[in-house]
Length: 311
Image (cartoon, rainbow, N blue to C red):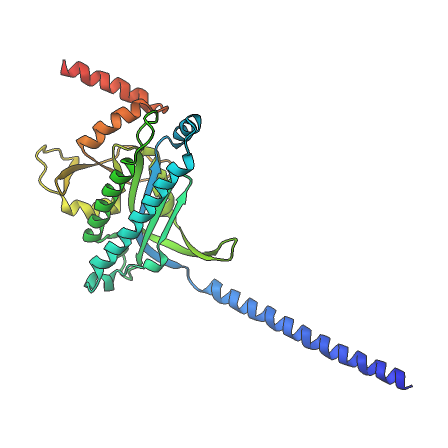
């Protein structure tokens, strides 16, 4: 009888322990559900910002040539990466210094903690986020001073990276460059495979910026409409009197900006602009001749046409 009583007591203890454990599990599940529901109710972080894309021209061909010459492609691409990350870090510091104690920083605050800088294959990707504005329409207006700072930095970074030495058998390194000002960009917090938290960005403007790469080459820097509208305030008098282009001056160098005439598939009424100058176009000629793309044929024919005109 005593044994039966001990057995029943033991079963009762097990049942109590199991019930307690089940209650604990159920509470954990309820807490998780509540947290999930709170996350769903919370709006994603929406920001404005600048996107900079630097993409290596003919990277596949360059990699093949490096391998054929028994050169280290990894070292070459790492030089590009390191220069891109270095210039990105310097640009962030310059923006902070420019806005420190400035009323503009209170109105349109730079969110350095959420900057997205990464490489995608042979492309450098930098997104510089700013607080979204509560006033309708203000999100589409980039700060003229910050836009100028960014454009000057991008021009210098492009020059530095393209000046990196390559073996003589390999064409000079050239970059496709896109700079856009975007609104309604969503900051997304992610966890990588190692459990580290990271931030990425999604949005219609991000997609549009990548579409612009199709029209880019090393002879120009491509701008979207909102970035163009901010820097065009810096335009100087254009002696050519051409209505379809504006002239900008940075230091001793002059640049012309004019609207692209290409249609972007699936995007209606979206504008983009080319920023270039005579030196950028001339430097691109030789590089384009050695390219495997169909554009090189157009370049060859155009060069021949120009030589006929001169004669």
